[in-house]
Length: 445
Image (cartoon, rainbow, N blue to C red; front, side, top):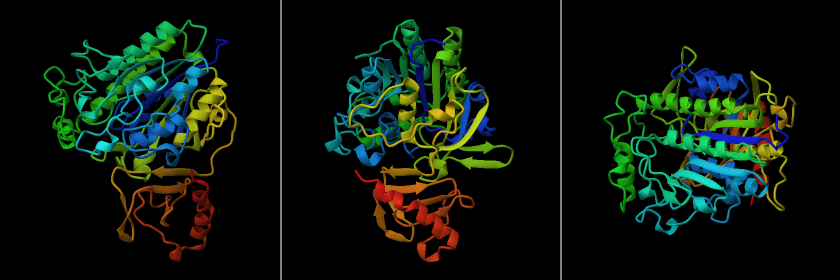
């Protein structure tokens, strides 16, 4: 192993829940490369994120709960310090390749006050970038076939006939090839476009050759509804399977490159999903358990995601960990891996799980906290005339308590269909409520 600080590669799938991977019991899709990554490292059974992509991404990149710095969907504060800034300032070579979508998400007719808000990719702290959706949302175009890619300050003109994830992976491999012999380690962030809608053919699909992405046909000044309509034209859930399996294949290509270049023992790979699977996708777990996606929901279907960490020689192969992991935990973990100190006065809300990766008990969580601002406000159960713009809840493996008072027994009601109100509490339920309720008063800006 090199004497340099470890390299770190953070990979995040888009719209892929825990139930999808074979290593987690999934049987609908073939995911041999991610299954092998789990066999070679540590798989986590209780990793949870936010129910939608932007809330997860903002928390992941900053190590903070959303009540501190969330400003709206598809945005991150322009002055925000991300892990791109921190790793770059700590001597790491840094690269992002994949989906950005944290600047100017709204079209002219949809929340114009948020137009041109957010953080440009140039200001996100990375030395190099190769991304989709860098600018206004109506200009984003295809992320899959013939992708619209913004690379280091210019739009590429050589992506016709290519597939987005292949472009991102190729760039990462090229980047690592240029940096692997450098005196400084590298940090690579791969926020994948797959497997988000529109569900379209991949290069391995029979329909690939004849397919033309509708999202590229009408780029330009349009309304939000027109942008959304274009994305739905080509969307067919049957291609979700093809996309899952192709994205597994592309991740395997990067892992093979690390092995080929003898970089595996010097490189920590962290793989996770950004939220649950789409609601119109149902997947089998083991032989008889069908799970339909719950993206956007605050129950397990929306937040339970795969988490795999691999680094031969540091992480023991074949380990399975049942500790609770939440989105704020990744940045302190990577700081520990890299022996990096957080900047002065920087707030980190998470707990490092690096000790668990190295075979120690560490300091596992007793609970997880979520501050979630959905795109559409939530109707509070039992109070149908009240809309809740920010959903706040605290949970452990057995119970979930919402700040508005509903308690759910996750052992028998994983989908949270049966709210328990304080007036109806049993002794056990009252004890669970009392253990979780004080968390909310701690979670203030």
